[in-house]
Amino acid sequence: MDNFHIEGSTYIPTIDFDAESGVLNIEGESYHEYTIEFFQPVFEWLEKFLSTPERDVTLNFKMTYFNTSSSRRFLEILTMLEDYQFDNNGNVEINWYYEESDIDMEESGEEYSDDVDLPFNLIPY
Image (cartoon, rainbow, N blue to C red; front, top):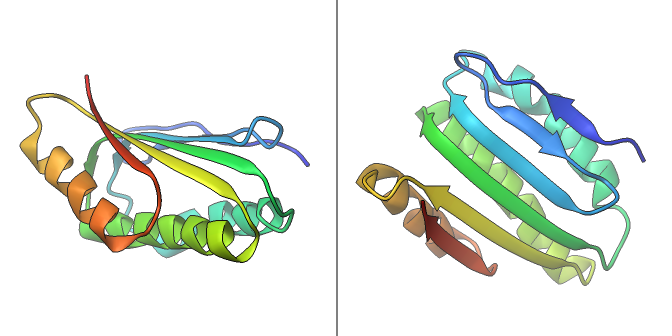
């Protein structure tokens, strides 16, 4: 399976998913106006990737800003990973990086960690 990459810009995050290592990176800012269309290829890639059981998957999430629409898509990604862990015997870990002074991003990570039943690490930098 090929890796998946989208180069970030002013309003879209860098997405770098490595199929071999199982390391999924999402980084930057996300306030794209059309998040459903933007994230559709991300969901399609994840569906294929997660069709193989018993993978080790690490999602490194290092956002500096995201809008409400992007927040919904991120929850969909986390839900897909949660389903994978329980339905396909996956080993999933979430690393939520946030600037130490960014209370909003820290609280967002805490809220997501409450929404899904996955190992969830809040990591200040």
